[in-house]
Image 1: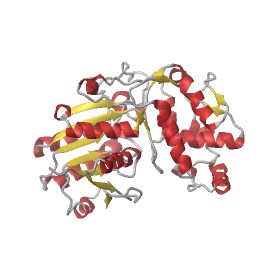
Image 2: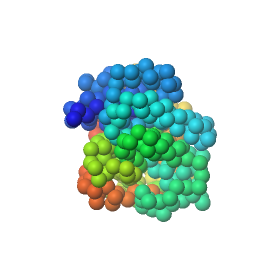
Image 3: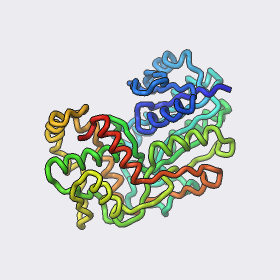
Length: 355
């Protein structure tokens, strides 16, 4: 039977890498976004607003997907508003698709805030889980828009009879311009500025993150798990953690990243140095670098999301992820974390997004 994929959020880190893998596997693939890009051949763009039923009905009128991958979300001022808006986006999409009776599987990408809490209470004292985090950990007794998104998928699956999978990556490393949660590109921009100005490449985070174990998720391995779960019976109706499959300490990796850029690394010195403050005045610096090196994107905020990197690296605990569940079911993919960053840096340089 023909596989017809609808990648929701196809312009983001997760969605764009997933769309690329699906196209390579010869799936008939549609990419839904408010402003779909046209960088990937054979990806069929679907411009639509998930908050508008009228927009979705019009955009999806002639599309009957068999597999739906929801990889997007919208950040709001409060968690209550995050819940309202992001659950509505999922509900609208699945309600519009319900009448088609074509959907066989829906995959939802969330993340480790499932265990750590939302931005307003991110890994704060009193909400700290045991690590490594495992899929069977109970939901926290606080508001969390990930839970609301999951509940929308569960309700629609019961109504329409499709299978589902939930995917919980750690920090996702991959290329995407204008993405709100983009550690890899943020660190690449920061390191490039440090090299240009002669500043030290200062670790911005906490002692717990500097010394503790951590992991990340390459967007490519996340894409592989999404496709595996959508096409593997034993993986249906399950939630899965997903990381590269290795652990590291930032007090090792930070120096590897600095070495790649040829900059002096400065480790944790007893004080957190938030990147948001460190890079606050770097907009004009980046504009000048864009002119000097003929870079494509002169607006630093389109590339770097310092606030999100600060949240990840400022946590008061080490955070690592158990991968046993999917391993036991046959998902054995592995990704070297150094290569996750280095491959991204090379791609950003080749595309003239960093010098």
